[in-house]
Amino acid sequence: MEPVSLQDFVCALDPASLPRVLRVCSGVYFQGSIYEISGNECSLSTGDLIKVTCVRLQKVVCENPGTGQTMELAPNFQGNFSPLTGPQSYGTLEELVSAATQSSKQLPICFMSTHRITTKARVVPQEQPLKLEAVEMHLGTCCARCVLGTGAQQVILHLPLSQKGPFWELEPGPPRTLLQVLQDPALRDTILTCPALPWHSLTLMPQYEVEAIMHLRRTIVKIPSTLEVDVEDITASSQHIHFIQPLLLSEALARGGPFPLPTEILEVPEGPPIFLSPWLSSLRKGQRLCIYGVASPPWRVLASTKGRKVPRHFMISGAYQGKLRRRPREFPTAYDLLGALQPGQPLRVVATKDCEGDGLENPGFMSLAMGDRLEVLGSGQALGVQERDMNVLVCQRLSDQPGEEECEEAEDQEQILLPLHFSGGFVEELGDGRRYSLQDLIAQFPLPCEVKVVAKDASHPDDPLPSFLGLRLEEKIMEPFLVVSLDSNPEMCFEVPPRWLDLTVVEAEGQPSQPAGPLPVVPVEELTEAFYYHLRKSPAFEGQAPPPRPPKSKGLSGQKKQVSKAKGVKSSEAFELQEPPLMPKPKRKTLRKVIKDSCNLYSAIPGHKKGLRPTKPITQDTNDEHNYEEILEQFPKTL
Image 1: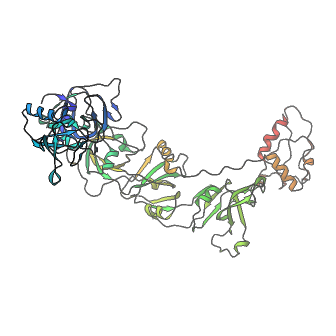
Image 2: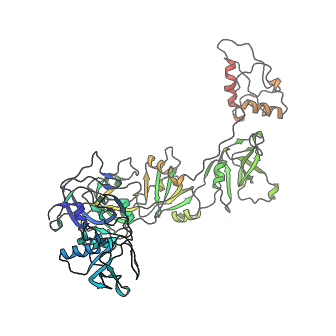
Image 3: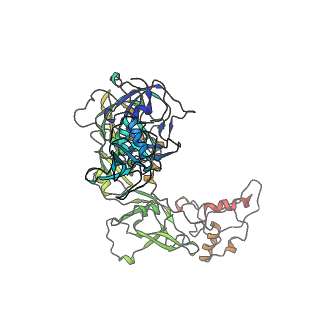
């Protein structure tokens, strides 16, 4: 086949003959380094091979041959077209008949008028096709016998040869649709007429979009047919040519098979690793893989270790077969207690450290001692600082014995109000010793959840989870994974998330090796710290609201003055002399000396000597209001 322009090749192409392999004989390069414009290829090199798989009609440009004006028609244009025999029009019927006789044409001939024709019988609309069958005498006048319409609806009209036009000669045959005209090779570059368009004569120039496959191009290449390149059809001699089409793992997942699929890695995405797994280092260019399909179930659990200075993070498959036992949860603040409270599930906790409350900032809360048992009731509101409403956690103090039944009525038991920002220490009171599978645990208890793996997954001999004191199951992630194995080691199966590790592969030849029995997939993958925090920033975790911000303090010195006034202590007595730096209040067990005279909180300060600091004897007064911050407040005064 001789080289032709791409436009001519596409216009003459029979869609039933696809696919066709073409060689670019005369390439084109768009100025600059742009290879695509609006998703279409605009640069092809001489010698490129393209495999045309589909041709789509984009639009049709309609041109007036007389004026050069153009307009665009959509592919679904509904008008009908009739071909004209030439661009010439005739002023009367006599001129039309004379031109037909001179060109040795035999009657009948088809024609139309660009103006309406009025006769005694009826009115002929403009551009209505008519068939001139013969010239004869009618009522003493030389007339043209014409037929209007087709089939049973034909009407005979006798038009005098002096009838004025202009008239246009038409090719015989019924009107055609736009697609019929474009598919008829005989009508290519033919002058047409269409009653639905404003011009009496026109030409059609279709524009197609060619979909093709090219070497090492991952996606289908789209080429406009108007691209100025010459191509040669080499389909007959290209049976040995194989077009390498790259494939992303995400695309293999989206198309859903067929599996198993043998592949070879062409490119590994750049970036830090996501797993701390030995198989990750095997994913390099040229490595052959076998994709067995989508992993089941499609959910994973994000987990972190407990009891370690540097926690480790894991992604646990829903197919994990180890056994887990619930561990008491730890709650650093009252807000965490409120978040863990579930309707219909009582939540009882034990305080893990002593906490002294301030009645001004924490209304209704006096103190908590280590070992106090509380039952979380729910949220509420109380009057806080500056008489503003603040959100609090309503708790009920329980007896010291976990097995003792509460005999008092609910209204007689002591209730404690904890501000949501209250930073204490609580541990869940838990009496559940059952062993759960991961699926049952996730179904019965909300996340996050503290667990201990008491039995490892038998299918995973190197299961690292039982070696940890505890795990925090943080979030359930719904994400599809692909089960993949190395072609060199079919027994090493692992699960790859295309969303975060989207390898570029190419389909390889040969039959994949199928392991005997179920696939030995690793159900636990350790995450890198960077990828773990990347997951924590994902939209799945955006719904977790941050804890409330504590109210601004009015200042320690102001609070102490108010407390002193409330207890009847005169501040003037305490600040008569220059205050020495205050020492922290020691624990009672560490007291070596008890001063009996504790009437005055502060003793007289002797004269300062160079190099010496004023000191204050330690007292045993339980009403001592010393605070560590006061040391910093009074320190500048001693300099």
